[in-house]
Length: 115
Image (cartoon, rainbow, N blue to C red; front, side):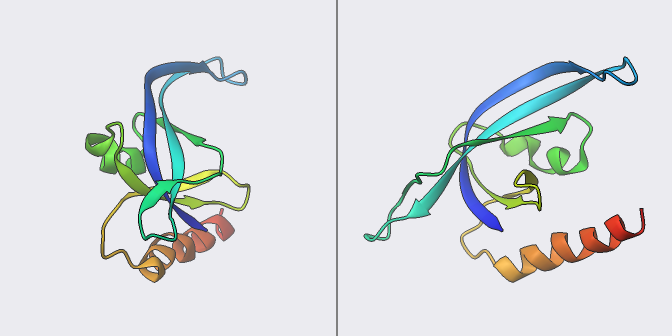
């Protein structure tokens, strides 16, 4: 599923130590609040809880959106099978949900089955 969200917080350079390898990695943590259109056609915060997305600083998806990561910026997020944010895309007014599904979900199924 995909959701329209607003970026509400950015925590940069969070260092997480991998317990298996002992290696430390830098992450940026983005907090997204889901938003929805009300009966008047205006957008407002939904009743859903905000969700965090942890990005390694060299993550390809993060590199694409990093320059847009300011408080209040709208994005589309894809929620994966485990209920976590998978893909993050910039908001566009003429958004085509089917293009999002084709771009990310069809290719991810193929790549996951080949692993």
